[in-house]
Amino acid sequence: MKSNGVLIYTKESAQKNSFAVSKFQEYLGVNLVDESYRGDADFVINRTDDYKIAQYFEERGIRVFNPSSLSRLANDKQFCYEFMQKNGVEIMPINYFSLPAVKKKCDGHGGTEVFMIDKKEEFEDGYVYQKACDTPGRDLRVWVIGEEIICSILRVSNTDFRSNYSLGGTAEKYELSSCEIALVKKIISLIDFDYIGIDFLFNNNCLVFNEIEDAVGARTVYAKTDIDILKLYCDYIKSDKSSIKAVLQPQVAGM
Image (cartoon, rainbow, N blue to C red):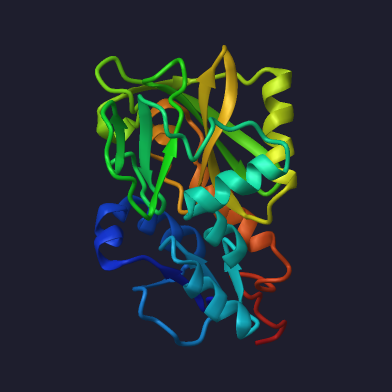
């Protein structure tokens, strides 16, 4: 008997991420639903970036991957920067009123709502204004499942200050130094999560926290490594005793 796990994507995202959907269904036998679903579930994999969805199921006692607290933190850049700064994690200065500056939509993703501004404008609500790093067009993403760092990928663009792979940047595997591993571990010690990407900028030749990706993609992991990271995540979900006893329930002897 399959466990009644639910995978939540928006309809548009489910089409865009059909590879990931197929992986979750292959490894966990989950039911794909959209963001309007409020039915029963043994566990929920929330891939919508909407913390209120996770919160709804948590209030019913249902285990959600990632938890609502992480989704809320990761999907509000201003809130996330303030949290990291308060806890001693270096960020590029925010509420930055000098030029040039980087303007980011608080709930934006994929670099599509990030702009470099070099002339005065009215500051808009819903955006973070941040000092630019000294090495634009270069950043690092680190994938983490539970307490384990899975891999890290350096992303570089020679034509844009944004280095996102989806925007045409290049990518290659990156070996974290002991100091960089310590920084990642410090960040993950501050938050409750299951599977995330942590993005870093480079400034003064050091990593500086940039953002957390909640419904993190894995295209570059599959393109640049032999790691089946979604299988690792599904194995993690199977082993989580607070979510389900087992994805495939063993048959009772004699039946």
